[in-house]
Amino acid sequence: GFGDFLANRMKKSLEKKVAKSNLTEENIKDTLREIRLALLEADVNIDVVKQLVANIEKKAVGTGISDGVRADQQFIKIVHEELTEILGKTKKELNLGSRPSIIMMVGLQGAGKTTTCGKLSHLINKKNKKKVLMVGLDIYRPGAIDQLVELGQKNNIDVFEKGKQDPVITAKEAVDYAEANDYDVVILDTAGRLQINNELMDELNNIRKNVSPQEIILTVDGMTGQDIINVTTEFNNLLKLTGVIVTKLDGDTRGGATLSISFMTKLPIKFIGEGEGISALSEFYPKRMADRILGMGDIDTLFEKATEGVDQRTMEKTMRRMFTGQFDLEDLRNQMKQMAKMGNVGGLVKMIPGLAGKISDNKIDDAQRRLDVAEILMNSMTLKERREPRLLKAITRKKRILKGSGRTEKEFNELLNQFDKGKKQVAEMTKQLKMGRMPNFGG
Ligand code: GDP
Image (tube, rainbow, N blue to C red; front, side, top):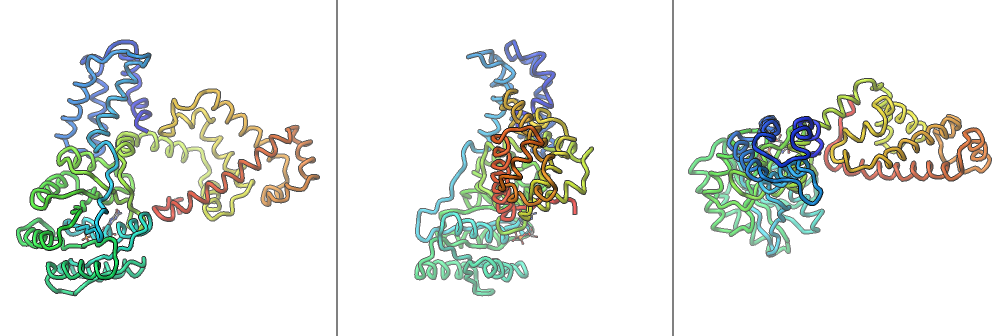
């Protein structure tokens, strides 16, 4: 995605001025400006943007052509590396070494802390196959403990709570209870406030001293913009955080907040929240986030294009059928017709982040040819056959179609195999989407 973004946005300046020469202050000036704008658009803190661009410039200037890699490609690589580096380079695992492991969740009211406790418990329970106990310690926000209890009930995770009892005492009791009852992980949902104050910090510090958590994780709202750095820094100064979870990175937020936090606080981001549902928590991969922060332009273009000449109703209907497992060859045919309106395979590939430049012209031609063959074959089928592909197992039908289309048996079989494979992939994708977020098909 990232490479394509640059390709789209900065192609001209890069290719004309840089491709065959060394990178100089002068010939990368325009490109750096584009990067600066893109980062600001992604809501990255201005100080971070300045530093980042300065770093890129420093690294880039003087770099020339080496090992047959063009200077403009090297420049793209430098930017990507620099972003990934700032975002923490590699995925950082949770420390779940002790038994029970204690994870203390902290954060301001409304950041999504309680929701995230539920999501994290669910994830640890499912992925790590561990028995998790959630502990309700937010005795100030009305309904917070009820919310946690409800999350637990819905998702089969036990909850320990003692109503309005002093959270410092409840925390200790919960850990004792977890030890006695064979829990692997204890997740403490501590109290939040609208703002940081001494009372809150004293309480959190006392809980920390009382139960010595392996992880102290701050939940921050990824939509809050600039204030996010101050909040993170203050919590970190007082509690020595082991990580951050950034929530509300769903929709079209580009995740600029993650870059600001990583750069300014150097704390590892361990997860990101991408929705309200229980499964909407993803592990944080610096590389993927680097892609996302700068790669959005292409996806936008793709969807803009998609909505231009395409018959929305047909597309919507096809998508619905696809995601409810009813997809058949007639749907495939309709979908291919709509796709064709968006352009040929080569044009589409250019727009999909991560694909441009990675697929050879030969492969693109091959894919286009296969689509054409598929269309010819499907045109020779009856509607009934397309609606019920299993009918095509009958040898007489197959013979008739081959004769009518003038295609080979091999091509015929290939189409049916591809269709079967595609259907399975969609089923798998649907499962994933249901666990995370469901795309909106416009209705
Ligand atoms: P707390 O006060 O920090 O415990 O906040 P809550 O857990 O009650 O969350 C506040 C609101 O943010 C709720 O409406 C949540 O559903 C919502 N929320 C939490 N995480 C996410 C997220 O990743 N994406 C979206 N869209 N909403 C979220």
